[in-house]
Amino acid sequence: MLKPMSVRILYFAALADRLGVRSEHVELPPGIVSVDGLRTHLAARGGVWADLGTFPKLRAAVNQRMAGGDAPIQAGDEVAFFPPVTGG
Amino acid sequence: MYLSVQREDFDVGAELARLRESSAGATTAGGAEAGAIACFVGLVRADNLGEEVRALTLEHYPGMTERALAETIEQAQQRFPLIAVRVIHRYGRLNLGEQIVFVGVSAHHRQAAFSACEFIMDDLKTRAPFWKKEETTRGERWVEARDSDTAARARWEA
Image 1 (cartoon, rainbow over the protein chains, first blue to last red):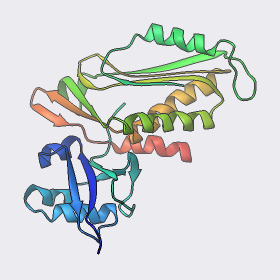
Image 2 (image 1 turned 90 degrees about the horizontal axis):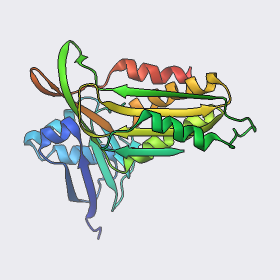
Image 3 (image 1 turned 120 degrees about the horizontal axis):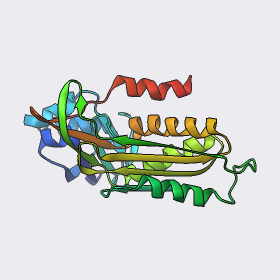
């Protein structure tokens, strides 16, 4: 039997303000294997979380590297969601 | 290469002196000595999209920020024959006119030095995980990414 997969998730800037959460540990059910899969899973919490699914130009990073929606995620990964960056 | 993500302000004169010191006796991969130093300093602007800005707060992603900036510097070193590179980027609350970012490079000739500064800025603006929140006369707002920044980065691939 597959064990639940634990990942750490970070949210930044306007997205973090919207969700009211900056970081969390989440136990994922089997079958969530990509950034997009995780995003859909979290958006399904409903309420403000639905905005995670529709947030414009949302970016993601896996283990502190920019990652596309199809990037794989594994147990122990640090996944971050954030708006396009505006430094400099 | 020197890289710092910090809350504290920096002294441009001291940074240029350090750049010159670290360039003394060093050469490019091709053996050329330093003949040029160029730098860029980014400041908090008073206006953005027609609204008066009083201050801004820079949020960042600790860890990833340093990694992304190091990758930007590595790319610059691959593209241009550089001798020394220093990049400092601040975070936290910054008032009008305060310094945000310092990019300094040394090279054999000015062309590589100017170009590398520009490349490093264009690359970090689209890659380094920083986000600006402005305090304007009408309240706080998150700065939105500009297409012109994406275009500025894209032209290096043309």
